[in-house]
Amino acid sequence: MNRRLILILVAALVVAVPLSLLAGQVWIDPIAPTTRNAALILFELRLPRAALALVIGAGLGVSGAAMQGYLRNPLADPGLFGIAPGAALGAVLSFWTGYAASVWLLPVFALVGAGGAMALLALIAGREGGVALFTMAGLMIASLAGALTSLAISLSPTPFAMSEIVTWLMGALADRSWREVGIAAPLTLAGVGVLMSAGRGLDALTLGDAAARSLGLEPGRLQARMIVGVGLAVGAAVAVAGVIGFVGLMVPHLVRPLTDRRPSSLMVPSALAGALLLLVADCLCRMLPLSGGELRLGIALSLLGAPFFLKLLLDMRRGLA
Amino acid sequence: MTTTLGCVNLSLADRLTDLTLSLHEGEVTAICGPNGAGKSTLLSCLGGLVAADGGLVTLGGRLLRNVPAQERARCIGYLPQSPEIAWDVSVEVLVSLGRLPWGDAGAQAGRDAIEEAIAAMDLGALRNRRISRLSGGERARALMARVLATGPAWLFADEPLANLDLRHAIALMRRFREQGSKGRGVVLVLHDLATAMNFADRVIVLDQGRLAADGEPAHALRSEVIEQVWRCKAGWLGERGMRALSLG
Image (cartoon, rainbow over all chains, first blue to last red; front, side, top):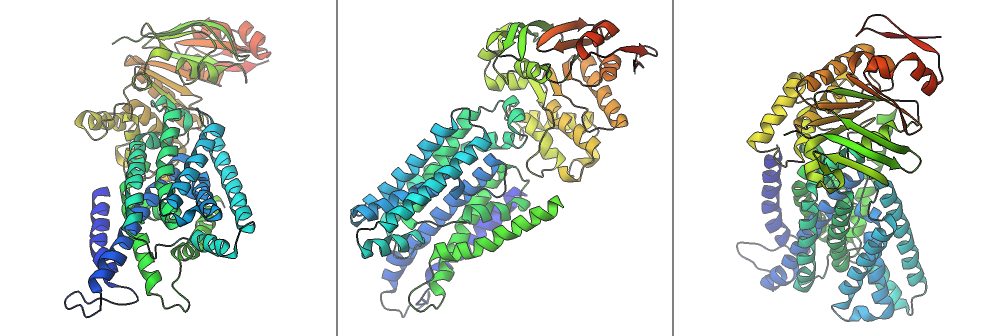
């Protein structure tokens, strides 16, 4: 069942990637390109953008799948651990201090923010790390990072800095180059690798903490893998694209019924489906005729995600009744 | 492979005090006692899930805390109290989780063990059914098959009969006995004294973390012990194997 799903998703990507390269504010005819600078648009604008969508989508999809497995909760999302808000805070500080003007410093600040949130999480949750404590610590860090981000915005040195911060926080893939791909791809790949190695531990957790330990799970090790893996994948995404929420929530949830429902079976399909979702969403964003620029990807996904979340909650309520 | 399991002077905060026990394979041992007596804590300590602060737990002549988690998991199967299953997997997938300590659910040896466990618990017809669609009795059998799939020398269960009606409780106890007669060491935390009396080979009675009685059921659960530990006057009625507790 799993292999077929993976094949279908790969096939969908094989179709979607070339299509996304042709679509946009100007359409490019693949057979006889009449557009001026068609090669430039393809290789310098659309290809890096598509590559970034694939990388970030895969990272966020796997992170969501791993976190839902770890917290044994289908409502979990990378934002919950406080790692995405931590990365966002780091990036905002780089705008605030003006260091964002230097090309490499914005991502560095974001990764430091993600790393700081990760370290704080490990420090509070401790080495044995129960799931409830971990969730609460994550929520606390998320709320702290959110408050500090708002503080930084309200104390912006110039209106330009404020507008830059607010625009960046909305999350987008527009105007990204191969440089961002070069930053995000290796970090995301490393994060995804770490999370994949946690698959067996997450499967054991299906049976609860005590049974998982009786199956040989070492909770401290699994927690460390979760922190490093989610930190790398989500930190890298926020570093180059700003905050793009709900991918980690929606993707595993949509994919789960098509697998055997073990957390480890969910990882690869979630990576592929996350990549596909972000690619298609980004493509639709830039095709949508909108006066005053294009719809920001982060906003589009939040608009999509909120009703999805609501539907999940209503389903759960019905389940309880 | 014989793997004796025991503890010497085991203590844990104010929950267990100076317990020395040696458990035997091929026997069904019941741990009984009032609420808060330390039954589940003792089971967790013997299973290596909780580290004691005093004394030693030994498995096959080695200190349990020095046995790698993976190896311990292959040797001791543990069914927790009120077991949870986070995702709505099928019976077969649930049982396959029992092979995690071996990492061979996809290999021939692993598949054989999974098939054997499914057959031993009569789950063949239910193998593709989702957990949410099982009855309480079927669920209990599926969870036990998960533990059996590991092929452990020791089978631990904490209150396995909770939430089961009389018929299913008896059926499950028979299955535990069957596993004992196959040479596994079965250790159960049991609340119901009549079940312990009728099905166990040996009963360990705990009282406020201390050993109050240990031996054959008729000896360990005699009226004086029940009065001393549970503070109830009670006596046993009926024949061996079909005893009932009459409360005075």
